[in-house]
Amino acid sequence: MQRAGNAFVDLIDDVFDNYRQFQHSNDFQQYTSWAKQFKSKLSHALNTWIPKASAFVLNLLSKLRTSMTAWWFFLDHPEVPPDNNLAERSLRLAVTKRKVSGGSRYN
Image (cartoon, rainbow, N blue to C red; front, side, top):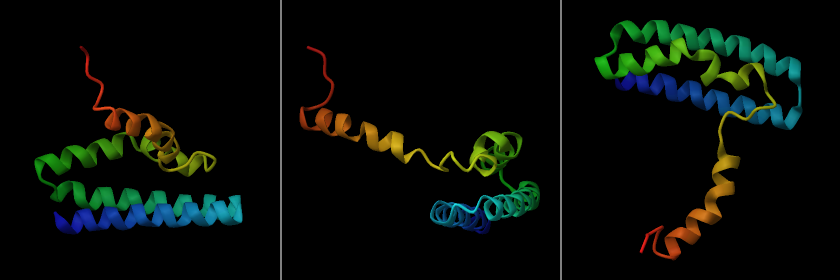
């Protein structure tokens, strides 16, 4: 299943590379063309690896296939980033303060 993992990591790397290019160029037509091709590659990868997957991996891949529109929402809506780093960064100060103060203990 290492090969399956590598295949999906390559797909995810492709997503971030192309999203970064879109942010730089703002070429919506090129992005939508790429997104259409990507969806095809993703469907092909899922259909290739699901029959070969172990129970744990099968569960994950099946969820990716059935919830494809939710997981890959940004493909159809490039104004939405493919990650939630902004949300994580906005919480970072609160997490750091909690760690410095010894946690969120109740007395």
